[in-house]
Image (cartoon, rainbow, N blue to C red):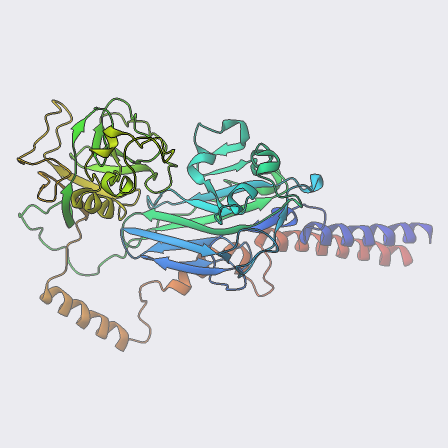
Length: 495
């Protein structure tokens, strides 16, 4: 009897251990440490999603990973959690999410990110906005740039760094702002995330993790452990068509605009556009745009820092073989000096005779240039006419000053998009007939649907009726075998 009791106890222990392993009772997960989930989602209880040039291809209900598919070569994805909201207890609208107490030492906040694309989708200047005391005073929010977390300027806050993933010590960065940045009650909130994406139509990118956690342990967060497969190309069943001998263009021109340039590597001037090839020396009141050269003679916009209207512009590093374009709005001195006599009586630093004689530098040409540049997005591809980075000779066919109304820009900039060949009417008709024929055959296998693809991608967790992953079924099977063995032994002992 004593042996039977021991065997029965062993049986119970075996079953309990198997169930614990199966359901992960003893394992900590990233979800246990989550403070704010900032991933894009169609679930309006998590925030308001806005998509431009993209769609949500898949949102995993188990892991929360979201896959975005581009419907345009340039896309923007926004997730809004709060609007016109600058501090807890203030006005504005909160759509979703909870405030984070950065003063809670037991839950020190880290920002974790993990994204990947097997189709070459490039993430632009992704930015998360959050409430901060010094910004709330001006009814604005603070910026947390993905490029800052991944770059070389704030390496002291990087806790985990990998290809497309990492952990950044947001709590320590916020604490570095002192009492001027941290609210008295320590409560801060992320208000929105904006992420520009660039790639080919149909390409996809997956965000596995994007949010705030109170751990930086990657054994728990598991960043970089999953990566997507390339999106399968739809194969045609028709015979290969003879390729046209006519050379196809690499790009399609989206738009052509004036490119307002006053000089190369010269001192910043009022209401000017300057091209820097050595070092960007412009002030914070300018907007800065970094262009990196491509092998085909085009340039890709790889960085921006907007200072017009705010004074917050930051000089950018000049890409090798490329340039930084700097633009400032200029001052309307006749308007600024309207009630002044140039004698300093107003107390303004510019109230002198020199400024009294200056013209209006906020010209039509510079306003047009600013409007054009405001449409540029990181990842956009451009082609320039008249740009001379080698000899730095400026083409100017005007007989008037650059700030005069009759000034005409001599340089041009074209926004490009990769060329996509359109099917001819005959090819479209043939494809329609083929699709109709396929639909008339009930047993014919059709192109993998979006739902089929989703099911295949999540087969590890959804390919059985119980919803268990394969490894869990194996553990259960082993436990069942162990139970059977113990029962057989017990029965023999009784006999």
